[in-house]
Length: 250
Image (tube, rainbow, N blue to C red; front, side, top):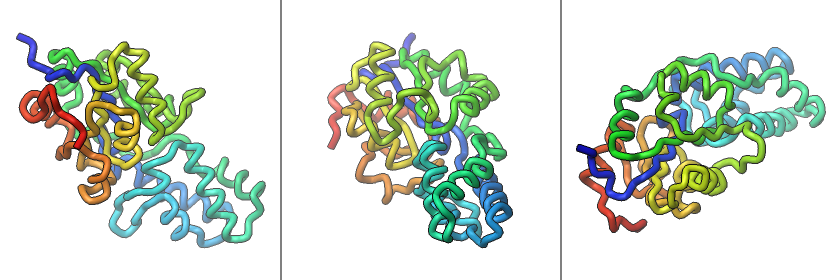
């Protein structure tokens, strides 16, 4: 017997902080980037770079900032601007960034729950699954393969795909819905940042669902969130028990 989906036909997931533990994945990236930049510039740029990225190196945590909210291109642009505040010319800063800000993270890939089990449940409910991430396609596909979830995914949009407009623009959400033949009002956006949830709201999706496994907090995400979950394993209960067909954005 198919579990009721209460009119939810598609879930669009952010990746880092939603499917994967953000801090374990990206803290090593931040520290590696700072080490390479300081070696290349011979300057103590670390504190400024950490601030730009939204990283607290003492607590070992990532909060809102370029690392959590932007594509690789956006991260590199922001770091270049930060380096220019130390007196580097734009062409110098850009060259250093290209050599010192890596595409992929050396961090640990730590799923927030049993992903194949969750996706099996969602599929049994008649729900399509998509991933929309600011990360690169190479890194994303590698991680999805390692989690054994590729067969469950109906669409994937990555930060370096040609022609995308990054979150919080509604562009990616609208394109995914069009490609999968699902109405906006039948779709949920699930993420851990303002950019994720704002995309869902601007696109007019059924709801934006915030998870507490990434960089956002209830306070920072409240404006754009319809529901809060500790992690994505709670989605089936949310859909079958909490949501109703006439759920409206409040």
